Image (tube, rainbow, N blue to C red):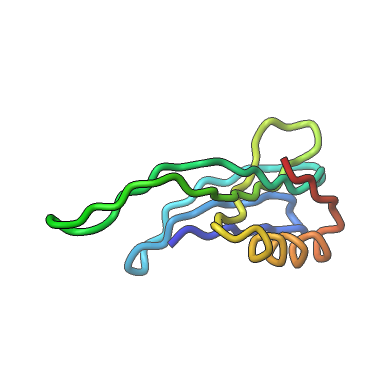
Length: 103
């Protein structure tokens, strides 16, 4: 599972993968938050079995937390439903006091 940990006291965030109790992470320091950005993108999909295959294109949304004066971003989440991702982003915005941009 992918997780994001933000430490406001020591001003760092960690993105980590948690697999069977083991955590692999990387720590990034920051000064302050800038905004949350939600991007939309199209991706191809394929599903079915040997007899019937279905192909198509679907829209997907990804949210990132941006930091002032840094190129580094933190991945917040991904969803096919914009409203679902906006609800998650709004909860984070309220806690951190940042604005939101939809691209």
